[in-house]
Amino acid sequence: MADESTPKAPAAKPDDKAPAKAPAKAKKAKPPKLEDKPFAEFIEQHFLPAVKTVLEKEEGLDDLQISFETQPINIVGVDQDSYPQVIGRWANGSRQFNIAFLEDSIKGPKIYSFATNGATPSTIEQFMGDERRITLDLMVLYVLRRLKGQKWLKGN
Image (cartoon, rainbow, N blue to C red):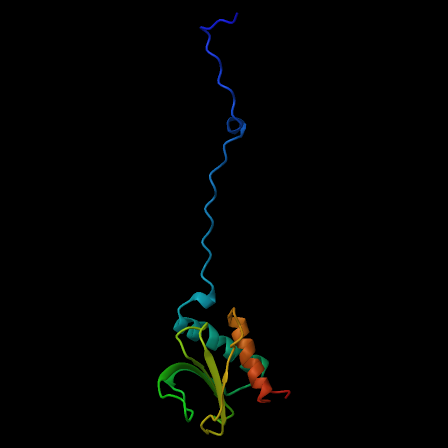
């Protein structure tokens, strides 16, 4: 008969045999994406310089003036509310394009218009309306695509 005065060792649990896990390392905080920066900061510090660089260095525009202004969309039949707009002019002001942001966000609706010889734009078009993910590179690509479509850049 077994000695009842000797205590029995408790049965081992499966978890008792596993080595203790080291605490998880804290992940380094990623810097925010450019596109997540405040709207005006993104446009002024990233989008305008990127468009200017591409149009001047890659497309040969030597008198490009590009700005970010809040003003009414100057088209007949469009409300007179003011919207933030990227405005590009060159060829002594004879060519101009506008990208108006209807919300203070690059992800919101945007419209594109253009004019020649100082005239008032007569047409507005949706700009990047089908894109779900908006990035700096994609925005610049759409500007180039639109200007090339008008045959306003070299090689057209």
